[in-house]
Image (cartoon, helix red, strand yellow):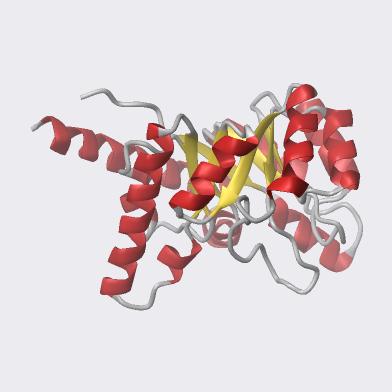
Length: 253
């Protein structure tokens, strides 16, 4: 049974949240990104929001300058953000929905309903040599819309799975993710997943063979308060690798 490396993208937004609570320069999200890189992260994610509530423009500039691993630039599909992305040319740009009143990104992008708005954004980013991904729900309609938009990558929103309060609901949400990831591969999309993943919830998602990248942030930064960032990332990396290896073994048996 063919196995593929499961990449880990570490989101450093909430190091910047702590920094911005007091102002100044500490703690530095770029330093956190470099530590994550050393601990085994395959990429770094940073979301430059319209209101600059955590990551700010200088952070993006410094991440582009200092990182050796790819930067995944999360952004709303606005002219301002497209201009910033095109100027910096990160490895990837992940289009996400964004509302001022939300605490964090809530739900996936409506790629199907927003085709006319999103199509020129995707084209401009692709023309700049940036790999475009869409943060969407585990919904075949949204996956098919991503293909029509010309986005080569989707990131499936795992929030409902992670936040499920009972075993049956979590199982249903996981099955939706499994089916969506399989459909993504069938229609030629590279499939990522993320939002709310923890030590307790990551293994079943990591075991899905058609998912090639997990993006995890808030939990890792929060847990790092107790265990240190390098240790926490290495533990997450080990849990992901074991889940993927065990799944490959079961399918080969």
